[in-house]
Length: 122
Length: 234
Ligand code: SF4
Image (cartoon, rainbow over all chains, first blue to last red; front, side, top):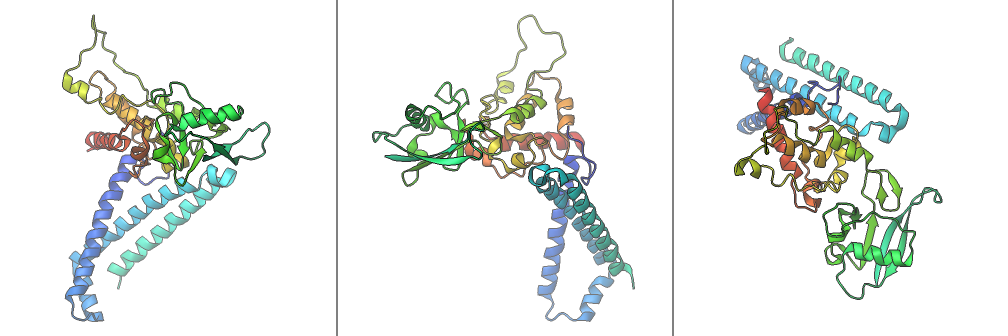
């Protein structure tokens, strides 16, 4: 058993499930938007606003946003623990890895709050 | 004449590893790579490599031949040589002791971690613990592993985290005991594996499957472990 406190769900299985489920949600959201664009003859500001007026679309968007944040966390965490290790960076590895992980998490948090503000703010 | 480019490193005399080109007369025969090494050793006895059974059973002579891991004793030249050249390197990702000999300690440590023995606290029956033919069948494709390390040293996840990711070989063995009807420690074994490194560093690129000299499929075993973990947790 390898313990780790910076991974998303603390358990390998939880991270794995989160990664898969969030991928499906993001794929569904992307496909929905692509089809929506194809359906519209010409997309203007009014249609775009109308689309995001509906609560359903806002919930779907927030779900996609949360999925994006979780997906990115699991992914970036995996990359940092693959490449920012003592094997490649020597003694500084732990400090570098921790700083990069924190920076990514802060960025993701900012995107999340910013995204909620865009969806529900006025 | 075959050109063999062989990785040489003797930590006592060399400051860095280097590749040495040697010409070998194979007599036009389709020799095994190990036979070529024996010929080389006849010319220069300082060349170091491991070997024992010379028939793909002991797993000692795992090495990287023209970029692909395998056992030198059962790899014919016709299968690996390109443009009359054979490049021999030690298994990638492990510390080199000398020439083609690598230090396998970390590989064995991962093997040790999965407790590669039957755990059963029930009193042993008078003769033996019986299995039905179906139960026994589940171990096929698992028990044949000879621990040659060709798979784990072909796996990037093992290269990056050899101390945390168990690696294809160890996980194949982990599943061998998870699948054994005589083993009682399934839950404890699964609990040990449910962290972000031990099993889940596998990204399913299947390098292990493509190099295994015994034709085993560690990726499938890892998939079964993941299924068991999901079953246990949902
Ligand atoms: S699974 Fe195959 S390649 Fe891996 S250690 Fe066992 S025999 Fe060697």
